Image (tube, rainbow, N blue to C red; front, side, top):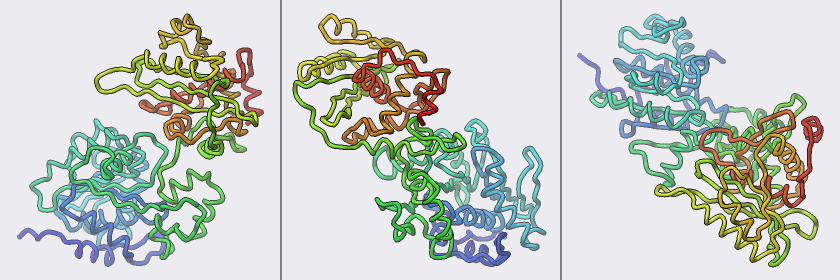
Length: 482
């Protein structure tokens, strides 16, 4: 006779009775937040459960214990552990399942563990027809899966395509009493447009809802990341020594603020870990402080009507974005900047005439001294010049742009540029990263779909305001100034 449906109670009982912790060799005890996670993972009313929780809270151990119970209690359990690489999957949830089996002689007798290469790699429970195996997150390789539970390690490191491919695999198990579910665990990451962001936007009403998806978020809302009293919001295991308070304090001292906020407070990081404004440490590794550097320049300023103004313009090849940044010197000699960004609609590309009208407006309201622009796709720039605007064509070559980028880098890090904290300008500035060349570096996108047009326009605006038409710095000068 087939056994009845597995309950949350039987899962919890199995974990606390059969799972031995590798570190202590003691039976595992589930704390309240872990019980909540297990209940969510076993809830048949949802098809996807994602938990956002800070590093060090035993989330992988907890999920490994749940998967182990699923293999031994549910017939025909099939659990792919999906990670960026097979090695990562082996070192995370799949590795935890393997150790739980190895450390309990009763489980080891009923299971078969194969660590070789190929399709037979995994943890098998022949008597139940169950199998857990590691697999890399290439969407094409996920197409043949038939999971009862699919585990997605570090959801924030995966693309929306990977998430979608796994969700599409769940339909094969609709007739099963236990159903099928995608389980994700993660902390935020610096990966742009990742699967976690996609789910968060959907769940919080910022994008189209995804049916059957539940998001459990342990996120600190604190503004002062140094306030220890609120660290428990992202680390519910803190009262139980997971993680130790000393480990968080050490990270506070060692990590740049945005990395600390992401990994310890589960707050979405601002900008990119490879931001062009980052400094370099003693090992020539980027420190991740670019967002803080940029935000040091946030200060209010009212542009003076009729006063001198300088502008930079960047138009994307496909007209998927365009930006104008204009700047005016403050009384203390710093350049204050503001931006306007154009985004195409689903029906039409950007109308270059709108950009021309904006520049004409600036020329009418202020004393427009110079407009530096990339001539590649700004096709109506010659007409603006004929109309009397001070247009300066700047070919996007490494020889021309690298010295300008280096000069803007130095100026921003020295707080010689101020801004009003505009979110779009901040996003574009912190998105941009360096691509080194023999004259220093130029700016590039971190990934397809990221936008940096306003950052390019900012650099051109700074160059126009400081008349950098003859600047020519080699890379040694840039590196010496970091």
